[in-house]
Each structure stands twice: as structure tokens, then as C-alpha cells.
Amino acid sequence: MKHEFRFSGTGGQGLITAGIILAEAALLDGKLAIQSQSYGPEARGGSSKAEVIVSDETIHFPRVTHPNVLLVMSQEAANKFSKDLSKESVVVTDTLFVKEVPGFTGKRYDLPITHTATETCGKVLFANIVALGAIVALTKCVSEDAIVKAVLHRVPKGTEEANKKALKAGMDLIKNHK
Amino acid sequence: MSRILLLQGNQAVVEGAIAAGVKFFGGYPITPSTEIAEQLADRLPKVGGKFMQMEDEIAGLGAVIGASMAGCKVMDATSGPGFSLKQEMLGMACSAEIPLVLVNVQRVGPSTGQPTSPSQGDVMQTRWGTHGDHWLIVLSPASVPETFDITLRAYELSEKYRCPVIILMDEIVGHMREKIVLPDDYSKIPQAQRKGPSKKPEDWKAYATDASLVPEFAPYGTGYRWHITGLVHDETGFPKGTPAATIAAQDRLRDKLMKHLDDIVTVENYKMEDAEFAVVAYGGASRSVYEAVDMARKEGLKVGFFRPITIWPFADKQVKALAGKVKGILVHELNDGQYVLEVERAVAGKVPVHFYGKYDNESATPEQVLAAIKKAMA
Image 1: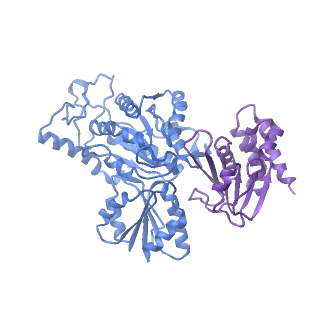
Image 2: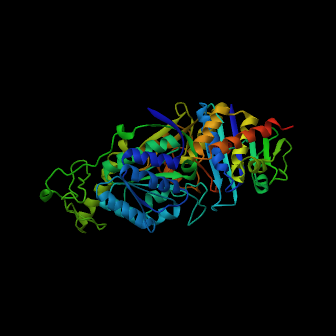
Image 3: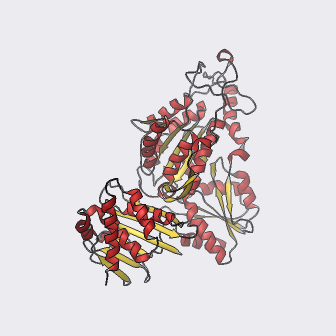
């Protein structure tokens, strides 16, 4: 089974970190994963995109061509990175930033990602981990054990509890989604 | 014991450098190679090495040449515009036979081009970037694990043949993260060694050679005195510009590599056993080709993939053999047609050579490569 993920938004939102964590969680589960990214020359701002492919078999081409899941955390990213979606693709949006996903009529989860990060952890910078929690709950592409381990492995010391809370809050967004 | 890691190609270079025993990095960080400098700045001091950020790219390679003269295993890493600047020092290292490894993580050019986008536009520059007839080795990895192996290999070749080795990467392999299994303990990895002096300082000549055509190396500060110059020199190391001395120097620099092609040149054959048509690609562009070949096979097309791992010296013998085996060849590169010219030269009209170039800041998808294969086979 091959899962293709694209996380997109604005530089600085931590989407590349989220991509790395997801790929590391897949390795912990004994699967294969490739993570790649594209970003502009800017240090902050500009569109940012991280892609992850998780599979049981060898992955040659590292870029996502048939996204199963697209996460959009800015309107610009929604406009720019939604062109190769299919009817089977699932789109997760952050309601704070995204009003529409042009041309997409498939399944959409409009979630208060950044809002939840602020509510639960007091800072917007946990939004990437909230989003990751939601995506893992939605797709079950990696085990809960693996994603917790992978998050704790990557985040700065002293922020472990806050990140665990952010991850759980993200998972709850899907569990409570109507 | 080993560890399973998710690493970028650039990080695999760093691991390979540490494992190979590199003790000096001199350079100037530049996207998309920056992670190499960044992480060696952290790692080298922990293994008794030195990291030196210089005022520009030229000085970076200059410092690396100096450290190598002192007997250190050395690395420099750069990208596009920085690689252009380093050409002067690269020629110096070829002429003076200074072992060093220079990584070029290609980006879109010319000039500052596109810092964060993939390209393979420097492949001919790695061969002919510095002026004059000169000889060096260029290796190009297609995956993160292979990047680690190739970094070790680069030191074996550079130390053995006393020449610069360029690791030619691209944004795809440099920046993507994939699974790699690395040993916990690098101390068991064999360390490449330069051949040391066999005579006392007073009897020793810096560029005298035996049948290997590779001179002995005496590190500076060990009592051996030698003169290093970019001018044409004889076995004493001092300039000598007679026609006979010039030919002797040039021929030896060529022959010390070209007489050992079986040791230096490596290629990968993927699904080539019964192939009637071959795709030729290298580095990051390979990633689309593997998948395109798998897709072609599913459709019953007998397509294989021939991948030069050693980019220079060119795999003449292997490409000529390929031309005797298949009915046609498609070269795929992320540029407007560079390495294809060498393939055409070696194939020499024996079978048609087609070209699919991509230079729009994005890699080709496997579907696009498959379409190019079908068009070429039609």
C-alpha cells in the first residue's frame, strides 16, 4: 500500500518538520518512506511544501504525483498545490487561513488547526503537530506509538508534554469531526 | 550494530566524510549544499577535526588544498555559483596532484539561477570547468544510501590516485530524506591511505613515480621539502616548461587515471538482461527512470536502465557494449542536452540515441519518462 502526502502552507509553519516526523514514524513501523520538499529562496514566508511517500515497497520517485492527502495551511498553498488532486484525494484545511480549494469536489476536512494549537498549547507554532495528529487519525498510515515516538525524537527538550498534547488535540479533531 | 535513520543525501555525505576520516572542511555554505557545511561544523570538532568558513568559495578550496598538503583527508562542498568560483583551485589541485573531495550539489543555472530547484546543468563543467587539459574523477549518487558509499569511495580514489574527486549531486538526492542503515561504529571502516615516502628526505623527489604513475606523498611538516606549483613541473616539483617535460607531465596525469579505468569506472545495470532498449541517466534523474522502466516492463516493453555511477572518466567501454546490445538508447538529463553528447560520441551512430531533457526547475515524472521512452521506441 502506497500513501502519498503533501503538506503545504507558508514557510515557518513547520510543515517540513511535520513531513520528516511522519516519515520517521513510518520507518519505526518497519515501512519505507521518502520525504522531499520544495521552498523558495526566502527564509520565512513564501509557499512551502513537504511531501512524504510511505510504502511497503521500494520507492524510487520521491515526489508526490497522486496525493492521497493534501494538507493546506494557507490560501496560496491551496491555490498552488491542489492541481493534481483526484476525486479520491482527501484535503485537510486550516480554517484560519483557507477559504476554498479551487476545483476540488472530493472529501474535505476543514479543521481549526492553528486555533487548536493556540487553545491547547498557547502557541501557534504547535500547529504542525496538531495537523500531524489529525492526519494520522484520519489515515492510520502509521501507528499511534510510532508517531508519538517520532514526535518526541524531533522536538526540542522541554517541549515534549506540549507536543504530546498538540498531537492528541489533532487526533481529537478527527475523532470529533462530524 | 547498526542504526536505521532517515537522512538527507547531504547528511549522508557528512556521515560518509566522518566515516572516511575527514579532518578538515574549508568552504562557504551555499544552497542546496548548505547542510553539508552546517553539519560538518558541528561534527568535525567532535572527532578532532577543524571546520573553517572562509571569506569566499575560492579561499574555501584553497584552505582545503593546504590542509591536504599537511596530510589531512579534506572536504569542500558547494553549489552552482560556488562551483564556478572553485574552478581555479580545482585546476591547481589537478596539476599539483593534491587529494581532495569536492561535493557539488547542483542547482539551476547559469549564475545564481534557482537556488532551491533541481538541475543537472553542471555535468560538463565537472569535466571541463577548469582550463587546460586535465584529469579528475566524478561520481554521482542516485540515493541516500549510495551517497554514503560513494563518499567513502571518493576518498579511496582520491587518496590512491592523488587527484580531486568531485561528488556530483543534485537538489533531488541532496535534499530528499530516505532510509539508510549505518554502522554504529565507524572505526571498523577501512581508511584510505596515501602512499607515503619510501626514501629519506634528502633522496626523495616529490613527483618521481613508479609504474603506478602516482607520486609518493610526504605531508608538510614531516621533514620532507617540496615545491608546489600550478606551473608545469618535472619530478622535482620545480617549473620546467620544455616540450619534453610538458608532454611527460601531461601524459602521466592522464595515464595515471586512464590506465586504471576498470578500477575507477562503475555503472549500474537495471533490468538490462533481456533489454532491447536502454535509458541512460545518472544522479537524481535516475529516480524517475527506475519507475518508468518498471512501468514499461508492466506493459511488456523490454526496456532497461544503464546508469553511470562514475560520470568521468566516461564509461566508454560500457557504453560501446551497450550500443552493441540494444536497438536504441534514450538519454534523460535535467538539462538541455550535455551528457547525451558523450553518449552519442561513444555510440558513434551504431544505434539511434534519443534525448529527453528537462530544465523547467522540476524533475520529470515517471509518466513523462515513460512517454519519452515510447516515443523513442516508436
